[in-house]
Structure formats: structure tokens, C-alpha cells
Image 1 (cartoon, one colour):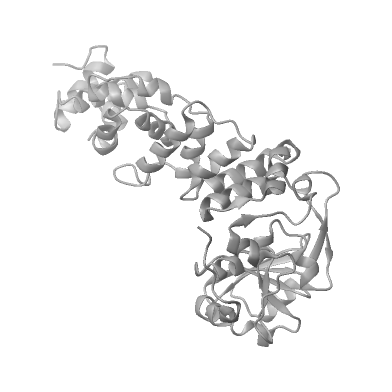
Image 2: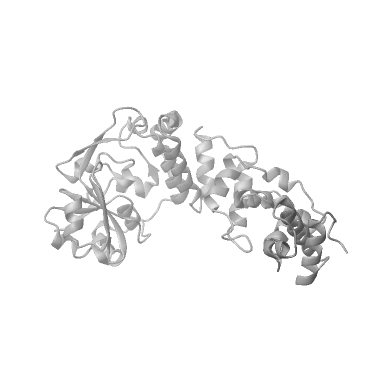
Length: 377
């Protein structure tokens, strides 16, 4: 179903309601300033606030300073600045054009004389719209973004777009899954030809992490697989779905970074998750030993693979601790060295398995194990 957009004449009121902190900017700026990109797209869709991106036909750092921002940073190479205005981060960029010296390279930036030139450097038509913060509130839409938005289409601005920046294909999958949009055939063909090897692993990983942070992450990853841009391991999408559901509620919520776990489920590597999932520990101490040194992502994947016993590990066993410590064993005459660790480990195993309780029993078992016994009276 195609989205229903708010009327263009309602944009001014929508901006006032969604971004009241922008009201004083036009009066402060000496040069024309525009709200651009995702903020305009989401306003037209009636989705409310998005990240605030402004373009000034002038100096971005100068505007940030003129606004008296509580905090600001500047990136001279790309002629951008970030500022905190009324508690909100605002990205400010000078109107600019870009050229790419090689496929996938970072762009060479030059000043642009107007907003239309700046919009021409963007990824998709639905992100290449702007609204001035001065004068009449009008939609500046030189590439037909509103029509594509209304039709639910994703379209690049020019045929070389994916050669310049192949990560745009990753972003497209994120938008397609989030909004239920589809790329037009010509753009879909470009996605399938995108060469992600021309960009750094860090940039690829950053875009994939953004995808995995979305509610529709699995759908976006499925699109990337369809376009031949990622290799989903067998059962990876189903496992990623289970991991996403697992980490969305108790007791696993907050235990592992969801984006990292979803990517590991879909793409790998999963570390020792399969090995852990195949275990069926007889005793709590065996379960704790099996999880020792394993990261949260590995454990979340193992639980999603069927290791139900990990629920008890998470809720009960991982927080079991001794009342004694190494100092108690040293004070009792155990020499420094591996004997101390051996004694404490054995006492903890016995406590986990309900074979002792209380400080005195812990110390007695630890001393016995440290001196060569098994700690069991």
C-alpha cells in the first residue's frame, strides 16, 4: 500500500510542531538555511521527528557559533558541524558538491552555490528534498522525491551512484525494510552490481550494524542476500529472528548487544554457540564451567539454538559468589599460587551444586581442595 503523505502546504506547521528548536535559526543565520534529507522525508510520511540535518549556503561552523550552541564540533574536511541546540544534536553542513576520485573512496568536497546542487549529491530521491527555514515554506524537490515517496519507490539520482558509494545499497535495504518500499528496476539492477569490496570493512560493518539495529533488520538482511551483497548462512535468517525476539524481553533483554547478535546469527561467526547449544549440563557447576569465558553474543545465540538451561544460568547460577576470597586462604596458610585458585574454584562448584553453604563450609572446602583434596567433607 502506498503511503499517504501530508500536503506540501502543511510542511510549515509540521516543522513547527516537530522541531520547535529550529524557530530561531532563520533569524540568526546570515545565509539561507534548509532542513534536508530524512527529516523532510519523515515529515511528509507523518512520522514525526528524525535526526535534524541542516544545510546552509555558507559556513557551517560559523552558523553553529552564531547559534550559541551549548556544545559543538567541526569537521573541516567535509564542511560540517554538529551543535547542541535546546538539548538536541543538530547536524549542519555547508551546501556542497562531491566527486569521487575512485570507486568507494571518500568524496572530495567543494562548495556549492545553492541547495539544488547540494541535493544532487545525495543517495536517493526520497532523501533529496529540502524545506527552507526562511521565507515561504516550500518543498524543494528537483529529483521527484515526493512522487517516489508517495509511490513507495527507491531510486538513485544517477547511474554512477553505486560506483561512487556502494554502501548506498546497504542503506537502501534498510529503507526498503523500514518503509516497505521497493527499488525501481534500474536501481535494483545497480544494487546487484554494487562492489562492496571497494569500501573499507569498517564502513561495511557500520552500515550492517545500522541495519541490524532496525526493527525490520531480518527483512533488510534478506533483501541484501537477494541482491547478492551478503551471504546468509543456512538457517541464518530464522536464527536472527529468534535472537531478536529473545533479546527483546526478559530475562535476556539487555544481556547482549542486539545488533551484534543479529549479525552473528545471520552472517556468522557465532563462536562457540553451536558447541554450547549441544551441551546438556547435569549440574549447575557444569553449566557455569561451560559458559566460562564465553561472550554475551555466543550465549544468546546458543540459547536461540535451543540451550534452554541458559535461562537458569542467566537468572540463578551466574551470580552465585563465595563469601570467602583468596585472602582467607592465604591467612589460613595456603601459599600464593595455583593452589588458591584451585581451592576457590572447587568451593564455588560445591556451592553451585548445593553441597555446602555458609562461610565456614566454604573455607573448609576451599582449604581441603587447595591442599590436594576434593573439598568434600
